[in-house]
Length: 74
Image (tube, rainbow, N blue to C red; front, top):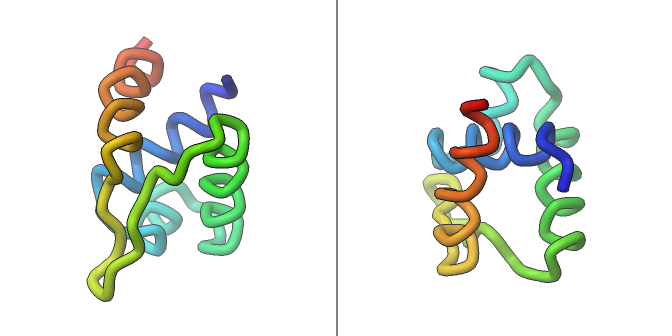
């Protein structure tokens, strides 16, 4: 699993917003969206529910989040 994808995933989860995460990371929003979709495809699970205020983690996303934090902090 690509640690760069996990870094983006963690940033989106922390911000609860793809656009805020994109801004923080210096990426275009479309780039972050495509990276999240790439990660979701690679693990065959949806990681975020899209809501009017942004995004929230799914159950699968919550499981991956703690794992991803360990990887990103290294």
